[in-house]
Image 1 (tube, helix red, strand yellow):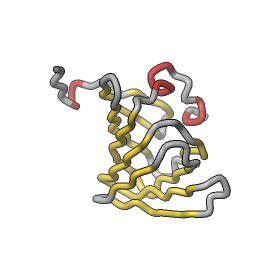
Image 2: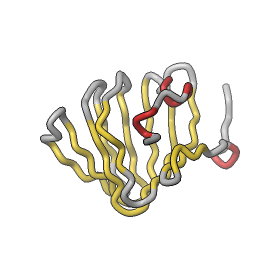
Image 3: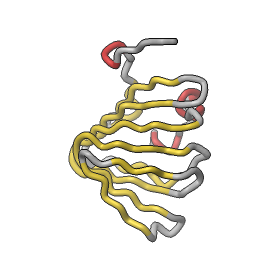
Amino acid sequence: MEKVSWADVPEEEVTPKMRRKLVYGEKVMIAKIRFMDGFLVPQHSHENEQITQVTKGTIRFWFGQNKDEVIDVHAGETIVIPPWVPHEALMIGDVEETDTWAPIRQDWLDGTDDYLRK
């Protein structure tokens, strides 16, 4: 068992427009993320099931290889993204959100998440 206070979790600056805090176990990872307006998460996919809960701002998601489906997720809303679904996301306004993944995002732990750092 491990009790964690978010206030004690170090915040990583991924880029000047993206900061995150990570808490994870063996099979599940939670990230509290802050984005500045206009940040674009480039299209990508991953083996992880993802649940994104927006607490401030709006995230516009494009889904599918051809970005055929567009969904805006506003503060107070949550979206579940199945594994391997290609997606891209634009931050509309300053955004605060919490992501949960299973399994954990190994690329976020070992620094191979280059698609975010461009």
